[in-house]
View 1 (cartoon, protein in one colour):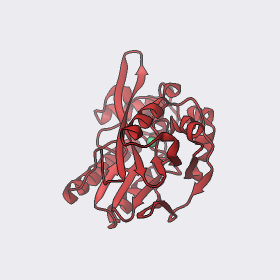
View 2 (cartoon, protein in one colour):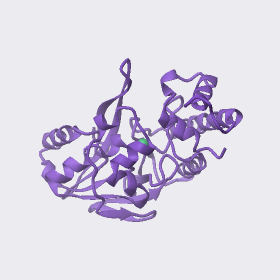
View 3 (cartoon, helix red, strand yellow):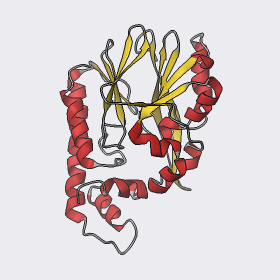
View 4 (cartoon, helix red, strand yellow):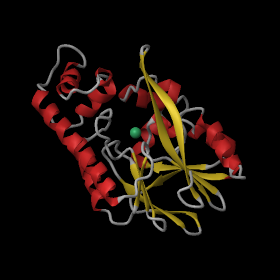
Length: 280
Ligand SMILES: [Zn+2]
């Protein structure tokens, strides 16, 4: 899908297997910038390099023209094909330093954040060639300047990317989606990042990793408000239930999920980790 002549959105499908009986289908957005060279933002799960390559071919270009891959953060659905694409193209990989540990050491990532079916989504680490800093500008093409906005909370080195000339803000996973799987490292940082997205006046198109582009200002406002209300409800439930030690693993997580009437497959170590990221 074309956002502009040169900036394309490519949703990449994948599935997460929570247990043998429970899997969910999701997609993650990647962005392809067709400049003199090609810049790619996020790469989908492992195996997505072929879909990306096919899409680039449909646009009469070739994946070997990818010069830069920017990773919004370290989670498997964003970096799963980065290693393969780097191998094919020799591209440079850019990400925030806060994500170095989990991008370059995926065993550490799965140990600390055990996403169900992790190695089905990501099986190769990739080396970051250059760190991105808050406020930095990356020139993707003559009139395509990408401004890096550090947006911690979902993960410590998550970034948002502002397309300055086209007024598109790509927020990756920074905005929690109502009723979706609670999935963040630090609640207070997440709310702060959400507020800076709300007060940012430099964009007219809001693009996340999980939604089609949102252009109606009222819908943008509603989306941000719903995310924050959901977070506040989670915060209240977490703080009302947490008592310190738990006799049974995931007991605390289970109580919060059941209290809020969320699906039972949300009772898992990733969500438990998010709940422990509230100041409790
Ligand atoms: Zn994520």
